[in-house]
Every structure is written in structure tokens, then in C-alpha cells.
Length: 88
Image (tube, rainbow, N blue to C red; front, side, top):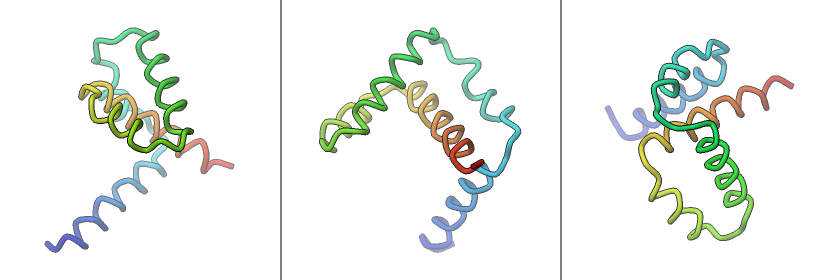
């Protein structure tokens, strides 16, 4: 499979996930994480604040130093956000 075909497959998977309204698969990824509600709120606040700035290096450095669990939370957040943005 070529790189182009792999990218199309990934893109299609993202679009399928955005169309899917059943959040059970995503919940299975997030629910077992050992983080508090405050941890998640702080992570999302930091993410939103940094993503709105023009300093890509600052964002990239912060993002690259996140744990796997934090990346999972952000991935699920972005999927949910994409679903809600496309409802209207």
C-alpha cells in the first residue's frame, strides 16, 4: 500500500469517526485513564490557550511533552468538537 493510499485510509477513518455519533469506543479510551476532572480541565484550558496563539514552537514543545494519556484526552476532545461543529 502506498503512502498516499495509507493517508487516504487514515483520512477516511477520521471522517468515519466524525460521522459516528456513538461515543462508546472513544469513552473506552478515556474512561480507564487515571486523571482527575481538574487534570482534564487544566489540559484543555492549556490546549485551547496555546492553540489560539501564533507561537507554533511553544505549542509544539508543549504538545510533544504530553503523556500518552494526555494525547488520548486531546484526541477524543477534538473528535467530539468536530462532531459538534459539523452538526450545525
